[in-house]
Image 1: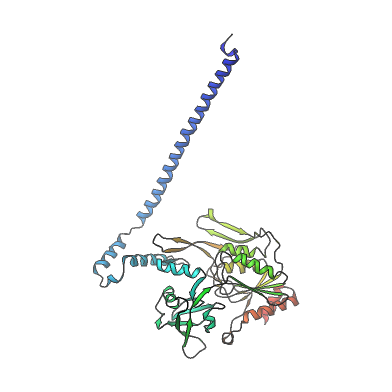
Image 2 (image 1 turned 90 degrees about the vertical axis):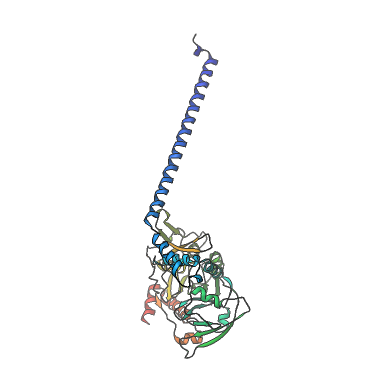
Length: 424
């Protein structure tokens, strides 16, 4: 009888063989794993070194430092500019040479001012402004604001604030003279196109809280919703406002002077009107791996009525996404003036010193693949404010929107309704 014929010897032999085999496999796997990991790390690190070393070699900074040294040693009056000022200026010029109006570099001071403005809760006169060659141009006067109370109007140009001329200042510098603690006063010299003389308006600043959504029921069949921004909570506030107007047949959606905000808020708002799963917007990035398509996500019943969307030259970004998608799905008539034309997406990159780089990282496309960047959206029905409208604070565009709705009710066709008003 051989050893293998004894049962306990067989199982002992099998156990030793199996254990040795298993240990061998595990050891081989360990060696292979560590080899591949080390090979991977070497490859990645070598690749990173190659990329960054080659980019540094391609970008010769010798001339930059040579010029800097010449200025430092020879320029009279350099003491008034710190090294940080010069570096910030150089970075600003580099960013400017990208030729992208939406890419911007902000110094630490400008970054703080920018964040304070975006917060929607600040001490101010209550107006949306932009830089003008003569000073600061009023784009929008917020409802219930000091600016509204003291008679400042859209298209006014602020020339001075407490005798400080704003003409040669940047927007952020100019805002600094207008913005100040609540309760303080600022005397503004204002140029108004239909006035012969420069106006002097004394405004008391107040703490401003910008409402994201405002709504009202105009009559039994028409509801009105105004979106001032696309913030974090806007979609939730919009859904609540829409639920109170659910029994209406029409919504006037006011996107005038809405410069945009979060794209996801626009997607959630559009989901109240467009069937689940339908494409609402897509983005294209430099790295195609990050390209993305956003679909309607709402699970409850969508609003089935028709919409008139009010737009103007300050409607941008998320506002344009919303307006265009509603038109492409034949849900809305666009009324007003041509939009701003911002079909790109910016990402903020924070620097260690508190400065900020807002960099364009993607472009967005409509459901049918259209790109409106720097082009804007033409309204179906153009309605331009007239001089007397500003003087009498008459909202001509909103008034015409109600007339369009009445015409649609009679004709019951978006296309024919638009044609009828174009004839007018």
